[in-house]
Length: 331
Image (cartoon, rainbow, N blue to C red; front, side):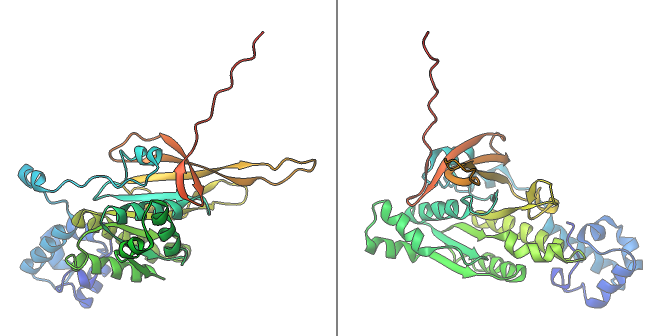
């Protein structure tokens, strides 16, 4: 409810009314709903009945409306979407849960996009639809096709499966919001949509968050709210990627989307990679190995702090072999 009041929230909130409210220190949805209706009619030109109508609209949009237990029983259960890497899927209770927002956070080239591809291929093989919002122009449909081929599908079958993958390039937060609103308003056209991938949300938000003012934070909040509502209403998983950036010279790394985003996802997987030093007489800089580690940093349904190793290879995301313990030398 920390979103700024906008004309699109309700037709009664005209530009003149918004200006009057702003002059009286009422800028956000929360501030409007927190004020007494009598105080609001003195802060703007709305009548008492109009204030009550606006409050009803805002409560309906931003409040968690209760439902009966019978309604919950009538909701169809959707199995978690497995990537094929059992250890990573096990962190989330078997795969990506329907109706939730899941974040993959890690440094560049750690395997975020590869995990997205693995889950996208799994959704296609399960007969579902996938929508990819690509902000970095790095999502490879050809690689997704190779993953399908490696899972035993013929070239003709792969072509039929890829018809259920929708791809859109987005270059701004506004374009992403428009795409999400289109999915929500045209649910029948997107029937069967099981996975919505945004790669990378950090690439869209970083320029806005670095600029002065709070416009970037407001848009980021709008995107987070819309992603969660679309996931819940359409019974799909919203999967977004977030980068790690250097906080300051000599400091550690931090998520690019900042503190304002930390509370938004239902689940967060932190990805890291092992580094190795090439053997030789001269010291070599560390280089990334194929082994990656996924750690569950946040979840509403699974124990946090658990981790799993996996490999990123030409075949996609695979199980990492367990390290064998060395036996103690015999006397």
